[in-house]
Amino acid sequence: AVPVALVSGLSRAARIGVLIKGGGALETLAGIRVLVVDKTGTLTHGAARLVSVRTLPPFEEVEALGLAASLEQASGHPMARALVSEARGRGLALSRPEAVAEIPGAGVAGIVAGRRVVVGGPRLLREHAGAFPRIEEERDEPAASATVLVAIDGSPAAILTFADPLRRDGGRSLDALRACGVSRVVLATGDRRAVAEALAAGLRIDAVAADLDPADKTDIVAAERRNGPVMMVGDGVNDAPALAAADLGVALGARGAAAAAEAADVVLLVDSLAPLPEAIRIARRARVIAV
Ligand code: ADP
Ligand code: MG
Image 1 (cartoon, rainbow, N blue to C red):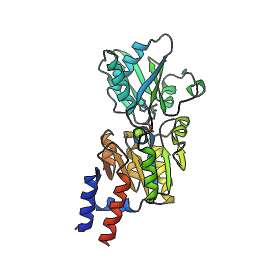
Image 2 (image 1 turned 45 degrees about the horizontal axis):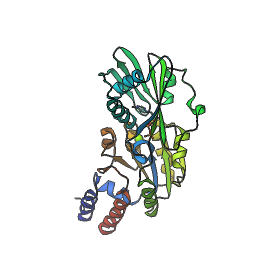
Image 3 (image 1 turned 45 degrees about the vertical axis):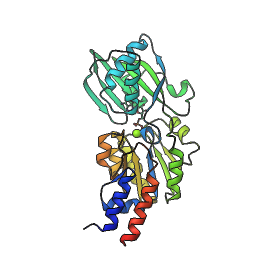
Image 4 (image 1 turned 90 degrees about the horizontal axis):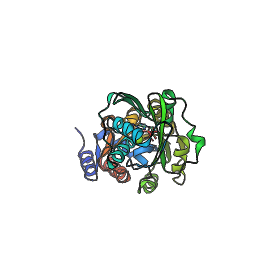
């Protein structure tokens, strides 16, 4: 039987929007020392906004955006949602994509209106359309942004820049976690290093790991367990293996992927990291009472 103190800890946590999947997870939460945190959709809003479109000849903006947004209807990624809502806002007619393959943490490929379309990050797009200009060298990256590339029929078609700012409570939540025993914070992202480091600046992050695929994220979590019990917080399909590998996986449930919530031990029902420190305090009190 689960001790009464644990049951009441679980229900107290649920009341602040933190769903903890059992007494074991509550006890682990009480002893967390290391935080590995995802960037896009976790430290940032996940409600990105398209701020610039650069098309590459002979492609034109309406065509490239329409095809890319049509394809992204099949993805739940924050950039996908931003692109679809931008296209709808511009009144573009979207077609239903076919033969869609989403590569978690990389992007999505498929057929739209008979055209081969790939939308995603630089790693994936170089494989599909090698001749993309080197965006790293092209311009200085504004701090809170993400770049998404579009290829059509094997050719580079567009470079999209999204503003994806830090959550308003992001810095405060990290500070509050440090105040309740988290001694090391690692940012782990599938995005590029320049973007990750710009976001990490000023957040007192101990290490930044960028350009990660889902297996790399899992390796980071496994390596960090040397430094103490690890909590991994993430929102995406690409985070699911790392969430499962951590001592405690925490998924952002409100807008995050179902696969992340399934792999996690804790699901945040609110779209915010803010309740996590209080959840740790609840877990500590439950442990003290249960002993
Ligand atoms: P994080 O690990 O920080 O959450 P992701 O791995 O989810 O970041 O995304 C990193 C990058 O991968 C994005 O900036 C984007 O370039 C690309 N990407 C991944 N999935 C998609 C998608 N469905 N549509 C567009 N870009 C994507
Ligand atoms: Mg993410």
